[in-house]
Image (tube, rainbow, N blue to C red; front, side):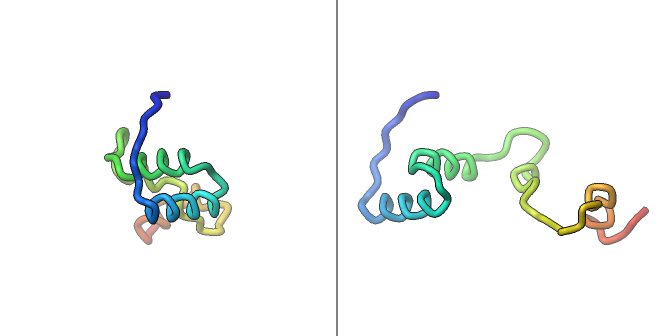
Length: 74
């Protein structure tokens, strides 16, 4: 890991600290997460950044992916 230094005004720092605390992480971890979310996604495509964000409540959803994504089953 490379150590770096940034400068935030008081309001930016207070907001970052409050959000980090609500997530149960450090300000440094919050800033790293924010940077990762702002950077272009590397890998299979930009949609990968959202993988795992949606919960259907259906335990078999991975077996019916086409129906969930496209609204139909082939």
